[in-house]
Image 1 (cartoon, rainbow, N blue to C red):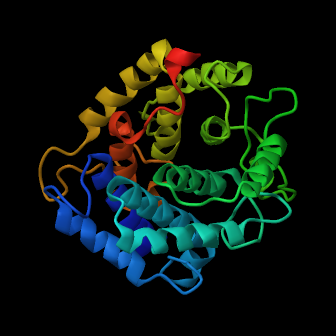
Image 2 (cartoon, rainbow, N blue to C red):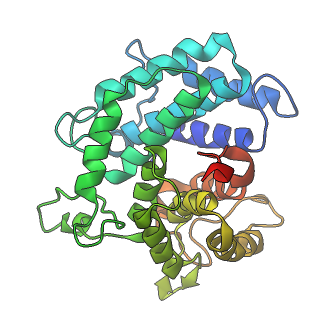
Length: 310
């Protein structure tokens, strides 16, 4: 799967996560090139996605646009650069217009279906936009909460599913709760107002601790950079012993598996020695940027609430 838009956005987010911007510091020109590239390809309706092949267009459109929107909102939030404000706001407006009117979330194409995965990226874009001072209509959150209510398990409302509406033999797995979709759902719940001491947040993070970061074995791989990226954010906000347990496993594993030399030094291999769950679709830049964003969680995230006031 190819997406120049997503690749550019994830790389830019990784630089921003280390504090670099398109206005100053060591990688100013690199970040400016990324910002300019995203804005140069933006269409009049706010869409940031650069078309690729048919397969990628069918699966990566709104994923890519949401990632690029997040990167632009963070760029604006970090610099208050008025020259990119309009582009970032129009990208947000495109997401608002693309919301599925029935399900309340987002999927691969505007206004057609919902799933928890794409909706998670959109929700992060909205959160970043609001922190940057951009405008997000309040009614989009009402629909997102409707999606979350339907996506949680009735008998275990701290667990979340990819697509509760899945109704064919090939898609019915989407109705089963998973650690990765639970981590996405819980992060969205934090963004919609849950505190870390909410009973279902406590139960959900307890459940995730049963699936601590690990590569697994060639015959039983458990390496999942995407899961680690979302769960790291959730555990960071959970704090305390839960964060220590999670990061205590994640950090040394990422440092140990990062390539130390050669042409690909600094990156993570998507397929060896243990294949990443989505490595064959996203490739080296995908797993590398998500791992970096997990390592940068200390610097990327302002507290969602004042812990001293709880």
